[in-house]
Length: 440
Image (cartoon, rainbow, N blue to C red; front, side, top):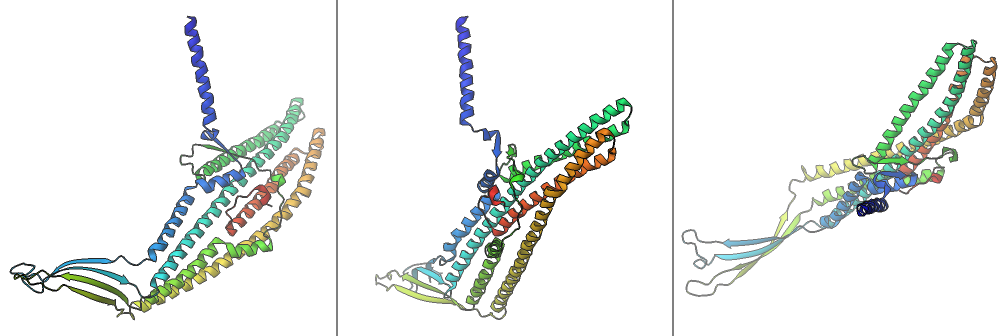
């Protein structure tokens, strides 16, 4: 009996050790992954499937460069020539021969170099598209973090507001019991508390949805993992005017969309050149060797060889090649117009950021230095006066609502400012990992 108990104890110890080892070997990220602001940016660059596909696409265009600059494959010709129909034979007729030949097409001079430059431009465009989407997804993931931080701070404000309403509720209950308060006021406070609970439910649903979207962006196919997003301290972020002059100049130089359109213009120029090359004939050179058998009498016949040149003449260039060249020139003009339009669009976006950050800076200072401190002082005074009966009930409720509203507005200015700075880095095509010190 004692031996059986000892064996059970050994089994329990072995199981406990096994679970301990599993916990050490298998990272906790298997069940739950804790992400902070910088780690999420790093992971989206590594795990996002769209970015992986664009990277592979860029590699695909890279491999085309040598393909497009190579000559067409040569052709090998094998033949039996001039075999008599009535009596098939290899030695009856002097014209009968066995032939082997090789033929190579040579495009007009400079065509292959133009194709190589076009392929190289296609590769550079693929790299810019990859950089564009990297910057875009980094901006999206950062914006999600700012949204979640905003809602978490807003929940704290709601809880603080609920404390004020709870104090007010206790006062009104005491007054109602004493017969100097109205039951309807108690019900009004309960309704206000229910409204705040409704907001809490809505905020939690919103943050859960954002949390789920973060999992999707990071490459979590089944979205089963729970991503606990670290808090961002909004109090440490100072709203400043954006963008600085040198940043605006950098955006106009380095913006990936502008780079894409500039590369497209260069490629259109090369396509015009390529179409112009079609006005010149291509040439195909070939050489063949023809072997003839001996005559029936045993006399040797001379073998023969042939050299040939075949030219592709663009005889219908007026109806075919000239319109194609004109089409490519129109395409180039279209790309130039798109580039100018995109420059105006980005310039407008930069001026909008400047105007908005100036507005958010003034509002933030107004809320933090004047409106909110004044409202909080007024709220404390109203609560004290309400205890003595010198302040009306609805005036106190309005003051509580105003405190909640302006604290939310203050948070919103910081959130929008952070998103604007992140968008500025997106316009720049910045694929580096930003920390909170960069959001200044």
